[in-house]
Image (tube, rainbow, N blue to C red; front, side, top):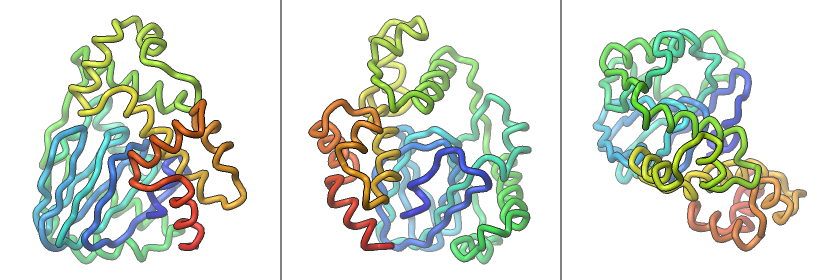
Length: 258
C-alpha cells in the first residue's frame, strides 16, 4: 500500500489502488482520502465510528481523522491526495469538516475504478475528477462545525501532533501548552477519536516510520529515534500493536515488493 506511506504535505501527490478483501489498520495522515466500494459492503471506522459503505457508494475522509478499513468480500478503490488538488473545497468548508457518510456514485464508477491507472502527471485531469467528487459530497452531506470547545481543542492538538510528533511529547506537556487539564484533554480526545492520547501519538509516529522503513540502508534503531521513540523496544512494541508485524518484518516485506 505504497500510497499510504508518504502522506506528508507533498506537492500534487496522488496515490490510488484497487483492492479485494482488504484490511487496513488504524492510521492517520494530513491528506484527504476516498474509498469507493464497487461490490459488496465495506466497513470503515472513522474516529471510532463504524460506517457501512454499500455497493456503488463512496466515503470522503477529511484530513487528520483516524480511520481503518475492513473490506471482506468486497472490491474497493482507495485514493489519497494532497490538498493542492482541491483548494476550492477547503475554501468552502473553512474550519468545518464534511460528515463521513456514504454517497452514491454509481454513475462515476468507470472514472473511480480507473483511478489506480491514472498517470500522476495528469494533474489537471485528476484535479477535475476530485473537484467533481467534492461538489457532490458537499451537496449530499452536512458540515460539522468546529465551534464547540472540544472540537476546537481536537483541531489544535491534531495540528500540534502533526508538527511535533518526532519530539519527546507527553500528555501533560501538551495539556500545559494549551492550558487544559490533562484528564480533560485525555477524555476529550478519546470521546472524539475513540483512542487515547498515547495511541494517537503512536499512530503519527508509526505512519512516519513506515515511510522510513522503505529505505533498506536505514538502521531500525535510528528510525525509532527519528520517529520520536526513546527506546527501540518501545518502538517495536508499538509498531507491532498497530501494524501486526515487527519493523524488521515490515521492512523486508516492503523491500521485496519493490
